Image (cartoon, rainbow, N blue to C red; front, side, top):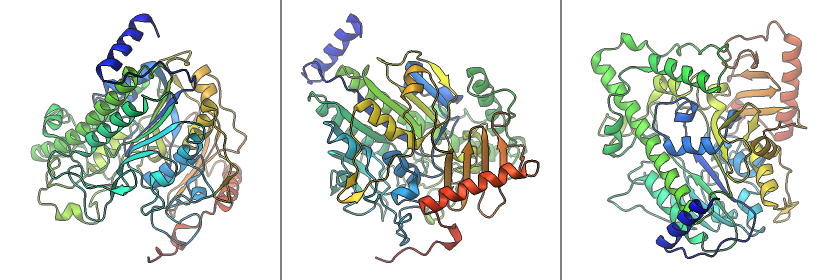
Length: 528
């Protein structure tokens, strides 16, 4: 940090009342930021037109991943991200219902440890603000799994303006109810994160913050002034938008021009075929979605500014990503969309989504969506930054990375020990590799494992080098050479049956090891 930056950070710390002495512990603070249902191309530094200056700035200070993989849905991604295991190994192979099987119990088991459970004994202050969704009941809440402080939504999606029936929010280990007026979920998650960081910065030890936004997951709820900012920008339509985003991705070096933009989804009409009234309605949907992303980006900026005021940002390892691809769902919330008083997106009395046409644009240049294991469902926009250590900031890496790599990365940079047991249960070893050689030095990521694996609700995939085997539920395996065909348009399974068979056998060995069960053979949820 140069003298001017140091003085600015010191002045900011004094102004905010921190009064903290300079830290002597050389270990980095660790900040893990997770967006919910954000598509691969939505943010500016991944080709999007949505204004995300704070994430774009983070990308300039860090490294962008063109091939960072999540799981196909929120619960499995969060389980894997927190534990370094595949979701079935952690007990969240499906969703949060208990299906009576070890891989499908619906909450984190004791044969795994969370990032917080690893970092807390190593002297880190462990903080979380946002969506949990890997254990609905006590004793499976964040503060039961290693976090010192928690605020947020224990459950899955809810209104941004109030708490929907059947949903739970908590402050630390106590249920919490939002105020009737002035509440907006994204801002509340940011406000609590800022306060947590401010309090923790008074201490000399490093901190870990897991900042898990619900934005931009449905319902489409945004503040009026944020919606107004984007109203009219999407009258150009999804066809033109996809083309523009793709061209920017190519210019940035994220995508190779030899990979064609996937065709418009067969279930999506051509924009020019719509009436003017329909175009206005669709414009509003995407404007609200963009407003949600914009608000989240401002919140991220506030949290990073708080770290900077404390003089901690330069030695903070920050990782941002999404939990899955854009979401094509409609008739959402168990019928809440049909029952909503207001059919128009945005205000508190509405409950709707941006649907397949805009999800297709969010996932540019890929096809398919959240829940699928094709690239559109599992490719995450990911940024890693560590200002004091990264040798080539502002670069893009094309190394394969996965959410199971987060635990080994945290272990490496923190010096924390990975335990052998958790309350008497043997703990499974992490499945991934540390990202530090890639992020800090620009090197490769050699893996000892045969590749990367996925399964969610019968959708399955296996990536081995540049080869990817993938199948949607009930469909035959498809085979792609992603070096030549990242957008998965040319299925080679019939031409290379032996390779497909060998990879299918490898996937089956992984599935057996992790307790994967055919989706149509899963037992019904256990009645409590």
